[in-house]
Amino acid sequence: MLRFIRSRLLEAIPVLFIIATLTFVMIRLAPGGPFSDERNVSPATLAKLEAHYHLDQPLPVQYLTWWRKTLTGDLGPSMRYGAHSVNEIIGHTLPVSLELGILAITFALVIGLGAGIVAGLKPNTVTDYAPMSLAMIGICIPTFVIGPLLLLLFALRWQIFSVSGWDTATDRILPAVTLGAPYGAYIARLTRAGMLEVLNQDFIRTARAKGVSEFRVIYKHALKGGLLPVIAFLGPATAGLLSGSFVVEEIFDIPGLGQHFVNAAFNRDYTMIMGTVLLYAVMIVVFNLLVDIVQAALNPRLRLE
Amino acid sequence: MDQIDKSTSLWSDALRRLCRNRLALFGAVFLLLILLLSAFAPWLTPYEYFEQDLVLGAIGPCREHWFGTDTLGRDLFTRVSYGGRISLLVGACATSVSLTIGVLWGTISGYSGGHVDRVMMRVVDIMYALPFTIFVILLMVCFDDVEVRWIDPQLFTLLLLFVAIGAVEWLTMARIVRGQVLTLKQQAFIEAAVTLGLSRRRIILRHLVPNVLGPIIVYTTLTIPSVMLLEAFLSFLGLGVQPPMSSWGLLINEGADAMEEYPWMLIFPGLFLSAALFSLNFLGDGLRDALDPKSAREQ
Image (cartoon, rainbow over all chains, first blue to last red; front, side, top):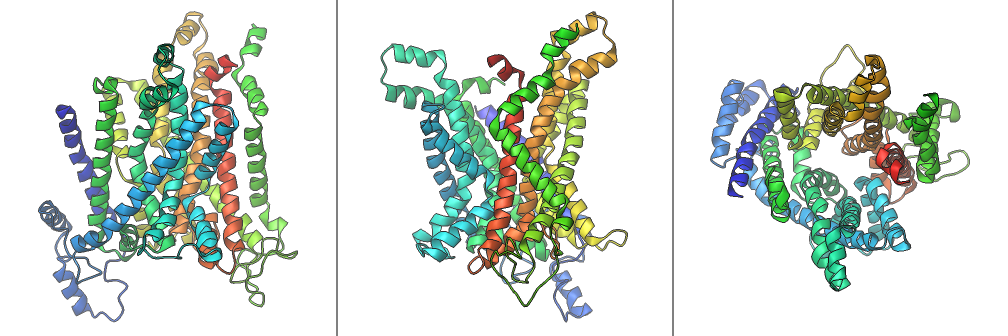
């Protein structure tokens, strides 16, 4: 197991290196710069600004400097919000985005697993069709349609929730539901398929023949196998949750990292872009690794590969 | 010989099964309607997509404006139909980009085997780990205002969309095609066909192509909705086509801003996008059931 984790971590290094390099090359090839929209900047001031952020040095030198500082944990000063470092901005906004993501995935798991189990136990009946139709709706209506619709109904018409903000516990409900809904729908479909496959297998019949209670058959035996595809799905889902949070944070006006990332790209805030992309990449790599470890622990056949 | 050919023809069987699947059929018909609506938009409506009637401002659905008008007094039915053009065009073109890359990559990898296969699949594995939406966003933001003289800027944005989305969506296709080629290479019926002395052309056209084509068609139908969703996502963030052009994602974005007073601005484009995604997914599911030989045996 340790060897497996070590080899996966070693594989992550070139991936992170490629991501950082690609991002660096891409944002530097792009026209414009962090100070290009500011009006009334004299050439002398511009030169000073660029010298301050070391933008006057040759690109390879800047690239190496960035890596040297990043490896010591310093992502540099933000080029747009001069007073704040990228580390500070991430420190303020990342907890908000993480909370949103965790709430969304919790909602998705609770709803998805529940609906999937109910549907999988009695296939081709009403209790199968109803949740599965709902799941199809959840998959086909995009986040940026569900979000505004929920706002329109629950915040503007019925005034149950406030329209925007991130202050009270109730402020978190609509964004988490919006972000989690499509994943809940996928998880429901995967759980149903997984349950159907497992319930037809010999060991379930054996368990039933031995007189094990139906509850135990489902929750002790079937669910463990039926969950495998769901766990495998959680890896790619993290990457999806990240991009989903860009939209949800914009719709509900949530002060998270997603909005900062999109704005940083618009503003050519080089250090901020590099910092957030690297952070996202690390998060995705780490989460995929966790998912692989859980999978290997649950399914010994995978470890041999 | 003719009779055997007839009874085992994959395509007529598949078509029969597809027609029995009501949801898939409904999806196909609805899709055709949207396609016609978008294609003939200029003849179906008396308005232009950029034509403003500022006297009216935003008005709700009525006889002159079936879906109402937006805050600038533009006819929403017109904008939704023209938006469908962009959404479907991006869906079709970006999917072809991803289809071409994916099929080529998968076929070469699977057919060559050995080291070439290992390296090519490793590249796919690594690319799977990249946060791709982030790269698409960076691509769209950073190169959106490149000064281009040789091409219309709106067209350039569209091309950028095709390339950016197409470059992201080919990975799964490559894996599927490689897997198919690998299994086909060593299957008995191919050997049997060779032993029977059938011509290469006949083996490829009658035995190889239909077997690889099924999964490709199914996966293509399922790629189109995810591509359209990505386009709408980018347009919603303000990174796709720019007004006064229209696309469903852009209209949803405008609608979300104005929904408090003018909810129809959100509801109609949202409805069309969701319905198109529904239809494509149902059609894809139906095609998978129809073309999968395993499900054929069960029936």
